[in-house]
Image: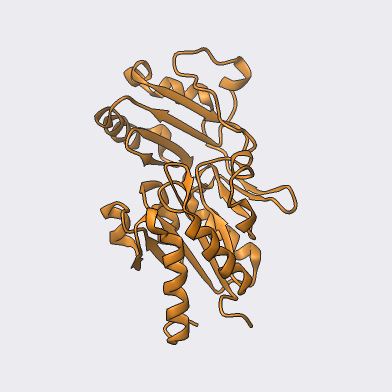
Length: 263
């Protein structure tokens, strides 16, 4: 039995494993050490399957991934979607619900498939009929100010169309829509059960869209420069992202295991 056997780390990408889309190299080396010593490592991100495959730390992943902020769990080894959850409303109903906010959108990105590299910005453009009657897996709305994004989020949280939707922000001016049963939290729960040999799931993140997986994980971890809300619900706070937050987490885990604080 290796020291990290039975442990699963689920890491956010932007602001956690990477900073401004640049990978913190210290994290890569630490994850290699973690997996070589029995651990399972995966990513929980709003990005898509195609995007992750081109990243320099892709080779570190040895478990199914959580993509599209949790609406999809994808297995790269089998090239297979293990779980995919759609919104319970069609795009036309979504657009009709936005009221005057529709005219103030800076960006509108609609994802129907986890293979999409990057959905085109459809703000102000016309959708095809088949798109309007489809059930998306994820929607992102962006604005040119934090104030507009916050006002829009508050409006949508109170709207009856979104009673089964998790609405969150991955950055200050972006508002994302995921099915309530298709978040990073539900994805982490699914991955742990699917692997079958995990006794401890560990989630690390920095922002609002990470909160469901932090609440679901056995051990929740905030990066040092995570939001106050993320720190408040986390069991541990590690180093800031640019210094290698994931590497610091692995160091702390090993220390706690050796001291008998963890199994």
